[in-house]
Length: 250
Ligand SMILES: Nc1ncnc2c1ncn2[C@@H]1O[C@H](COP(=O)(O)OP(=O)(O)OP(=O)(O)O)[C@@H](O)[C@H]1O
Ligand SMILES: [Mg+2]
Image (cartoon, rainbow, N blue to C red; front, side, top):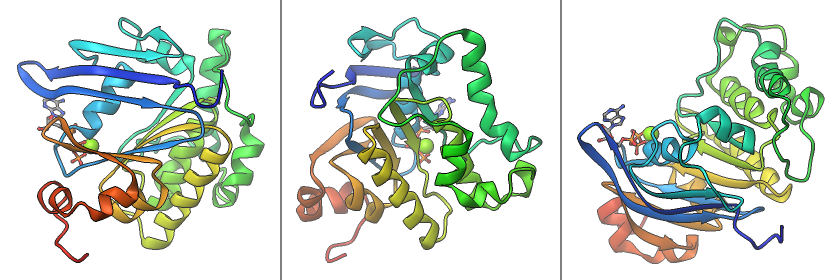
Protein backbone atom coordinates (compact mmCIF):
# COMPACT_ATOMS: atom_id res chain seq x y z
CA UNK A 1 0.00 0.00 0.00
CA UNK A 2 1.38 3.43 -0.93
CA UNK A 3 2.22 5.63 2.04
CA UNK A 4 -0.22 8.28 0.89
CA UNK A 5 -3.14 5.86 0.63
CA UNK A 6 -5.65 5.95 3.43
CA UNK A 7 -5.82 3.02 5.82
CA UNK A 8 -9.02 3.91 7.64
CA UNK A 9 -11.98 5.67 6.04
CA UNK A 10 -14.85 6.88 8.19
CA UNK A 11 -17.76 8.06 6.04
CA UNK A 12 -20.74 9.94 7.41
CA UNK A 13 -21.23 7.90 10.57
CA UNK A 14 -24.22 8.41 12.84
CA UNK A 15 -23.97 6.81 16.27
CA UNK A 16 -26.54 6.47 19.05
CA UNK A 17 -26.76 5.17 22.59
CA UNK A 18 -30.34 3.91 22.58
CA UNK A 19 -32.44 6.91 21.61
CA UNK A 20 -29.62 9.34 22.32
CA UNK A 21 -28.23 10.63 19.00
CA UNK A 22 -24.55 11.42 19.62
CA UNK A 23 -22.57 11.47 16.35
CA UNK A 24 -24.26 13.41 13.56
CA UNK A 25 -22.44 12.37 10.40
CA UNK A 26 -18.65 12.33 10.89
CA UNK A 27 -16.15 11.59 8.13
CA UNK A 28 -12.37 11.37 8.27
CA UNK A 29 -9.50 9.29 6.98
CA UNK A 30 -6.25 8.05 8.49
CA UNK A 31 -3.02 7.52 6.57
CA UNK A 32 0.15 5.65 7.62
CA UNK A 33 2.73 7.94 9.19
CA UNK A 34 0.23 10.66 10.08
CA UNK A 35 -1.36 11.90 13.29
CA UNK A 36 -4.96 13.07 13.03
CA UNK A 37 -6.20 14.83 16.15
CA UNK A 38 -9.80 15.16 17.33
CA UNK A 39 -10.13 18.06 19.73
CA UNK A 40 -13.24 18.85 21.69
CA UNK A 41 -14.61 19.61 25.10
CA UNK A 42 -16.18 17.12 27.51
CA UNK A 43 -19.15 15.19 26.22
CA UNK A 44 -18.81 16.25 22.58
CA UNK A 45 -18.51 12.70 21.22
CA UNK A 46 -14.76 11.99 21.06
CA UNK A 47 -14.88 8.65 22.85
CA UNK A 48 -18.02 7.72 20.94
CA UNK A 49 -16.06 8.23 17.70
CA UNK A 50 -13.32 5.89 18.96
CA UNK A 51 -15.96 3.35 20.05
CA UNK A 52 -17.67 3.60 16.66
CA UNK A 53 -14.45 2.81 14.78
CA UNK A 54 -13.49 -0.02 17.13
CA UNK A 55 -16.88 -1.73 16.88
CA UNK A 56 -17.76 -1.15 20.54
CA UNK A 57 -20.69 1.12 19.68
CA UNK A 58 -21.22 0.50 15.97
CA UNK A 59 -22.66 3.41 13.98
CA UNK A 60 -26.29 3.07 12.99
CA UNK A 61 -25.63 4.74 9.62
CA UNK A 62 -22.51 5.40 7.61
CA UNK A 63 -19.43 3.31 6.94
CA UNK A 64 -16.07 2.52 8.46
CA UNK A 65 -13.63 0.94 6.02
CA UNK A 66 -10.21 -0.40 6.93
CA UNK A 67 -7.78 -1.35 4.16
CA UNK A 68 -10.73 -1.05 1.80
CA UNK A 69 -12.93 -3.53 3.73
CA UNK A 70 -16.14 -2.58 5.49
CA UNK A 71 -15.92 -3.10 9.25
CA UNK A 72 -19.68 -3.14 9.83
CA UNK A 73 -20.81 -6.33 11.51
CA UNK A 74 -17.30 -7.12 12.76
CA UNK A 75 -16.77 -7.67 16.49
CA UNK A 76 -14.38 -5.44 18.45
CA UNK A 77 -12.01 -8.41 18.65
CA UNK A 78 -12.17 -8.98 14.91
CA UNK A 79 -11.42 -5.31 14.32
CA UNK A 80 -8.46 -5.47 16.72
CA UNK A 81 -7.16 -8.49 14.78
CA UNK A 82 -7.15 -6.43 11.60
CA UNK A 83 -4.58 -4.14 13.23
CA UNK A 84 -6.52 -1.37 14.99
CA UNK A 85 -5.49 -0.92 18.64
CA UNK A 86 -7.08 1.31 21.26
CA UNK A 87 -5.41 3.12 24.10
CA UNK A 88 -8.61 3.78 26.05
CA UNK A 89 -9.50 6.87 28.03
CA UNK A 90 -8.56 6.38 31.68
CA UNK A 91 -5.89 3.74 30.71
CA UNK A 92 -8.03 0.72 31.79
CA UNK A 93 -5.09 -1.51 32.56
CA UNK A 94 -5.64 -4.62 34.68
CA UNK A 95 -4.74 -3.51 38.18
CA UNK A 96 -4.60 -7.02 39.63
CA UNK A 97 -2.17 -8.24 36.94
CA UNK A 98 1.53 -7.45 36.75
CA UNK A 99 3.08 -5.16 34.16
CA UNK A 100 4.34 -8.22 32.28
CA UNK A 101 0.93 -9.90 32.35
CA UNK A 102 -0.76 -6.73 31.12
CA UNK A 103 1.69 -6.50 28.23
CA UNK A 104 1.43 -10.17 27.27
CA UNK A 105 -2.39 -10.23 27.07
CA UNK A 106 -2.83 -8.96 23.50
CA UNK A 107 -0.15 -11.22 22.02
CA UNK A 108 -1.43 -14.32 23.76
CA UNK A 109 -4.96 -13.58 22.53
CA UNK A 110 -3.84 -12.86 18.98
CA UNK A 111 -1.57 -15.90 18.95
CA UNK A 112 -4.51 -18.09 19.94
CA UNK A 113 -6.55 -16.74 17.08
CA UNK A 114 -3.83 -17.91 14.69
CA UNK A 115 -3.74 -14.57 12.94
CA UNK A 116 -1.27 -11.78 13.49
CA UNK A 117 -2.29 -8.19 13.08
CA UNK A 118 -0.62 -6.44 10.14
CA UNK A 119 2.27 -4.26 11.17
CA UNK A 120 3.70 -0.85 10.65
CA UNK A 121 7.48 -0.68 10.10
CA UNK A 122 8.68 -2.15 13.36
CA UNK A 123 7.86 -5.43 15.08
CA UNK A 124 6.78 -4.84 18.65
CA UNK A 125 7.46 -7.48 21.26
CA UNK A 126 8.10 -7.41 24.99
CA UNK A 127 11.75 -6.47 24.55
CA UNK A 128 10.98 -3.61 22.16
CA UNK A 129 8.22 -2.23 24.38
CA UNK A 130 10.43 -2.35 27.49
CA UNK A 131 13.17 -0.60 25.55
CA UNK A 132 10.69 2.11 24.56
CA UNK A 133 9.39 2.46 28.14
CA UNK A 134 12.31 1.85 30.52
CA UNK A 135 10.15 2.78 33.51
CA UNK A 136 8.00 -0.28 32.76
CA UNK A 137 11.08 -2.50 32.63
CA UNK A 138 11.91 -1.35 36.16
CA UNK A 139 8.42 -2.35 37.31
CA UNK A 140 7.87 -5.49 35.25
CA UNK A 141 6.80 -7.62 38.23
CA UNK A 142 4.70 -4.94 39.93
CA UNK A 143 0.92 -5.03 39.91
CA UNK A 144 -0.90 -2.49 37.78
CA UNK A 145 -2.38 -1.05 40.97
CA UNK A 146 1.12 -0.09 42.16
CA UNK A 147 1.84 2.12 39.13
CA UNK A 148 1.61 5.90 38.99
CA UNK A 149 -0.78 7.53 36.52
CA UNK A 150 2.08 8.15 34.11
CA UNK A 151 3.31 4.57 34.33
CA UNK A 152 -0.23 3.30 33.77
CA UNK A 153 -0.48 5.44 30.64
CA UNK A 154 2.82 4.07 29.30
CA UNK A 155 1.56 0.56 30.08
CA UNK A 156 -1.68 1.23 28.19
CA UNK A 157 0.32 2.46 25.18
CA UNK A 158 2.79 -0.44 25.45
CA UNK A 159 -0.07 -2.93 25.67
CA UNK A 160 -1.60 -1.51 22.49
CA UNK A 161 1.75 -1.79 20.67
CA UNK A 162 2.15 -5.45 21.65
CA UNK A 163 -0.64 -6.29 19.20
CA UNK A 164 1.52 -4.83 16.39
CA UNK A 165 -1.21 -2.52 15.14
CA UNK A 166 -0.92 -0.47 11.99
CA UNK A 167 -3.46 1.97 13.42
CA UNK A 168 -3.70 3.30 16.97
CA UNK A 169 -6.70 5.11 18.46
CA UNK A 170 -5.59 7.05 21.55
CA UNK A 171 -8.26 8.52 23.76
CA UNK A 172 -6.95 11.46 25.84
CA UNK A 173 -3.56 9.95 26.73
CA UNK A 174 -2.49 13.21 28.41
CA UNK A 175 -5.48 13.31 30.77
CA UNK A 176 -4.36 13.81 34.36
CA UNK A 177 -0.65 13.71 33.55
CA UNK A 178 1.99 16.18 34.75
CA UNK A 179 3.57 18.32 31.99
CA UNK A 180 6.76 16.24 31.94
CA UNK A 181 4.72 13.11 31.21
CA UNK A 182 2.62 14.89 28.60
CA UNK A 183 5.95 15.70 26.95
CA UNK A 184 6.85 11.99 27.05
CA UNK A 185 3.50 11.10 25.46
CA UNK A 186 4.26 13.67 22.75
CA UNK A 187 7.66 12.12 22.06
CA UNK A 188 6.12 8.65 21.82
CA UNK A 189 3.46 9.88 19.39
CA UNK A 190 6.09 11.45 17.16
CA UNK A 191 8.18 8.27 17.22
CA UNK A 192 5.20 6.06 16.40
CA UNK A 193 4.36 8.33 13.49
CA UNK A 194 7.93 8.11 12.18
CA UNK A 195 7.66 4.31 12.36
CA UNK A 196 4.68 4.47 10.02
CA UNK A 197 1.75 3.99 12.37
CA UNK A 198 -1.50 5.76 11.56
CA UNK A 199 -2.65 7.55 14.70
CA UNK A 200 -6.00 8.97 15.70
CA UNK A 201 -5.40 11.09 18.79
CA UNK A 202 -8.39 12.30 20.81
CA UNK A 203 -7.43 15.19 23.07
CA UNK A 204 -8.50 18.19 25.08
CA UNK A 205 -4.90 19.34 25.47
CA UNK A 206 -4.58 22.05 22.80
CA UNK A 207 -0.80 22.39 23.22
CA UNK A 208 -0.21 18.69 22.63
CA UNK A 209 -2.62 18.66 19.69
CA UNK A 210 -1.00 21.66 17.99
CA UNK A 211 2.47 20.20 18.54
CA UNK A 212 1.86 16.81 16.93
CA UNK A 213 -1.08 17.06 14.55
CA UNK A 214 -0.79 16.62 10.81
CA UNK A 215 -4.52 17.40 10.68
CA UNK A 216 -6.96 18.55 13.33
CA UNK A 217 -10.71 18.14 13.53
CA UNK A 218 -12.66 20.02 16.19
CA UNK A 219 -15.79 18.22 17.35
CA UNK A 220 -18.75 19.98 18.93
CA UNK A 221 -21.98 18.18 19.86
CA UNK A 222 -21.19 15.27 17.55
CA UNK A 223 -20.30 17.37 14.49
CA UNK A 224 -16.97 18.51 13.10
CA UNK A 225 -16.87 22.30 13.15
CA UNK A 226 -13.27 22.67 11.95
CA UNK A 227 -10.79 20.69 9.84
CA UNK A 228 -7.34 22.01 9.12
CA UNK A 229 -3.72 22.24 10.20
CA UNK A 230 -2.37 23.32 13.57
CA UNK A 231 -1.43 26.63 12.04
CA UNK A 232 -4.93 27.18 10.68
CA UNK A 233 -6.50 26.33 14.03
CA UNK A 234 -4.11 28.65 15.90
CA UNK A 235 -5.38 31.53 13.76
CA UNK A 236 -9.07 30.60 14.02
CA UNK A 237 -10.23 32.56 17.06
CA UNK A 238 -13.89 31.80 16.34
CA UNK A 239 -13.33 28.04 16.73
CA UNK A 240 -10.91 28.46 19.63
CA UNK A 241 -13.33 30.73 21.51
CA UNK A 242 -16.62 29.01 20.75
CA UNK A 243 -15.70 25.36 20.62
CA UNK A 244 -12.57 24.92 22.68
CA UNK A 245 -13.06 27.57 25.34
CA UNK A 246 -9.67 29.12 24.69
CA UNK A 247 -9.74 32.86 25.32
CA UNK A 248 -8.34 35.19 22.66
CA UNK A 249 -4.64 35.85 22.89
CA UNK A 250 -3.80 32.43 24.37
N1 LIG B 1 -22.84 4.62 27.38
C1 LIG B 1 -23.53 5.75 27.15
N2 LIG B 1 -24.87 5.79 27.19
C2 LIG B 1 -25.55 6.94 26.94
N3 LIG B 1 -24.99 8.11 26.64
C3 LIG B 1 -23.65 8.14 26.61
C4 LIG B 1 -22.84 6.97 26.84
N4 LIG B 1 -21.53 7.32 26.73
C5 LIG B 1 -21.53 8.63 26.42
N5 LIG B 1 -22.78 9.11 26.33
C6 LIG B 1 -23.17 10.49 25.98
O1 LIG B 1 -22.71 10.74 24.66
C7 LIG B 1 -22.18 12.06 24.55
C8 LIG B 1 -20.74 11.99 24.07
O2 LIG B 1 -19.96 11.32 25.04
P1 LIG B 1 -18.44 10.96 24.81
O3 LIG B 1 -18.04 10.07 25.93
O4 LIG B 1 -18.27 10.44 23.43
O5 LIG B 1 -17.75 12.38 24.95
P2 LIG B 1 -16.22 12.79 25.03
O6 LIG B 1 -16.03 13.86 24.01
O7 LIG B 1 -15.37 11.59 24.93
O8 LIG B 1 -16.10 13.44 26.47
P3 LIG B 1 -14.87 13.43 27.54
O9 LIG B 1 -13.92 14.45 27.05
O10 LIG B 1 -15.52 13.82 28.82
O11 LIG B 1 -14.30 12.05 27.57
C9 LIG B 1 -22.34 12.68 25.93
O12 LIG B 1 -23.52 13.44 25.94
C10 LIG B 1 -22.45 11.50 26.85
O13 LIG B 1 -23.23 11.82 27.99
MG1 LIG C 1 -14.05 10.72 26.19
